[in-house]
Length: 313
Image 1: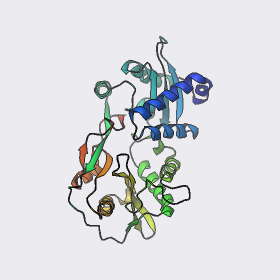
Image 2: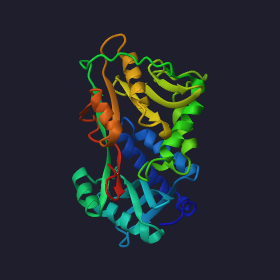
Image 3: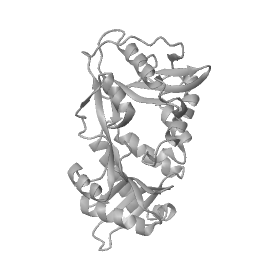
Image 4: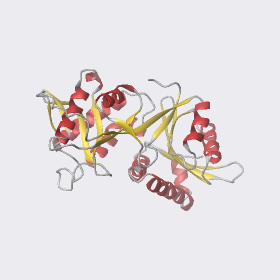
């Protein structure tokens, strides 16, 4: 493996591997694969990630990895091998720490040719836990929710996006090292890019963003939390994120925001709501209390990460 500048010098072969990885993501995960590939490309361009080519010692396999060096070790946010499968992937991951100072701490589970059972056998045996996302759905038959009577909750405005960016940056900077690449070092920049996709070409909201249902917690003019909804790929409202500034956790703000969003969405009648959640911790328990249930994802598996060390939950 080599530095990103040298990697780009490999030219056509590297370009082909990167393009095959993009095709794999888009074909295997139609709902989010393209945005994942675009995020990797952006983070290479801004220096958050480097692309590292790889050739097996017996030269029977080649590959590429998107890698970040952060406090505590290396994070692998994407990889592709030819041929695909557990053998080449395992060899690539074994070579990486020998080439770079540090231990691999995080590996995305979007691994080509490496099914869930094989991942479990491999990573669990090496002392990793799986930070898995699950699809959760609130059915139209769930109980109606009255909107919270708080003057601090209001619909989001385009001018709130910069403030919400600051909430994202504070929240992810406070999380442990398993979170994805934009947590460090470019949380604010990547969060702003991510949020700007909700804007249309003239500065208003995009057609897919559900602005009336998306809410912020306004604390005397300062946004401390937000819930963002979009029209999901299957036609249901999708809760894109529920985020609260860490200093304001455990005050019921997240629940109030989510209840306000649900009340808005269902004000004209029953409606299905979807979201993706980590299957541990306080947010997951909140979703269950508000009658979200796990359902099989349409793409067989949502994204997640293998993280070195015991589960923090």
